[in-house]
Image 1 (cartoon, rainbow, N blue to C red):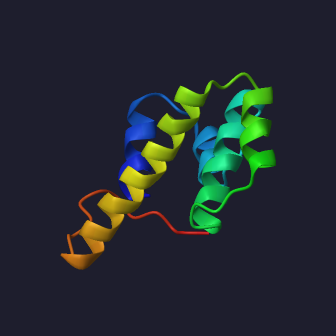
Image 2: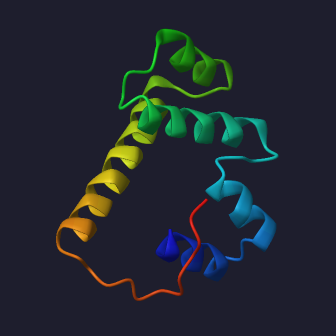
Length: 98
């Protein structure tokens, strides 16, 4: 979270945008759908139902883009697990988790 927050700030995201993203929210409906889906994938450990996938399609996502969202979730989980397993020190300003 610390690294993503710092990189978001560097990319020009506002404090409000960063806080919303950390909560899995966005004012843009298509982005909000992707964030909601990503959170569901994590919460359900990948066991999302067909209706959740269909909701992404209804927001204009192709199957390829849905796979890409899944890949990003998996990659972030993987890197987080590696960082935890090896006790990698956080070298970005700390961010309080919700």
